[in-house]
Length: 87
Image (cartoon, rainbow, N blue to C red; front, side, top):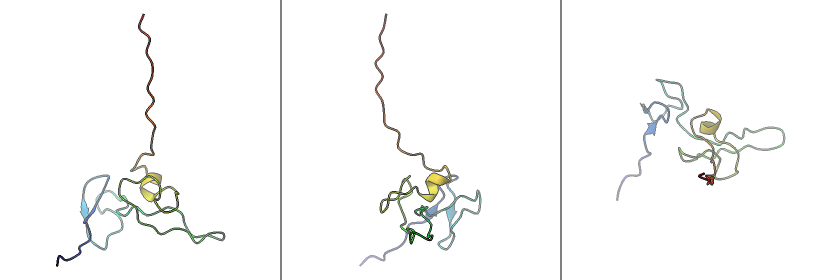
């Protein structure tokens, strides 16, 4: 049986490998865990879902992620084909 190990926390900004208990990169200060940015408040309980490092929006509730709010992951941009007319 293989031991289940958590992936190392690699900073998406600078590539530094953080410790297992680190929540932010010690080199550049970027968050190491891409949690949902929906905070608990008076109306909602918030969302604590941990998303993939490339997620701009939460897979559970659709709110922006911490990486997106920090500018570490760009939101989806649809590709538009432009028609160029040559003269």
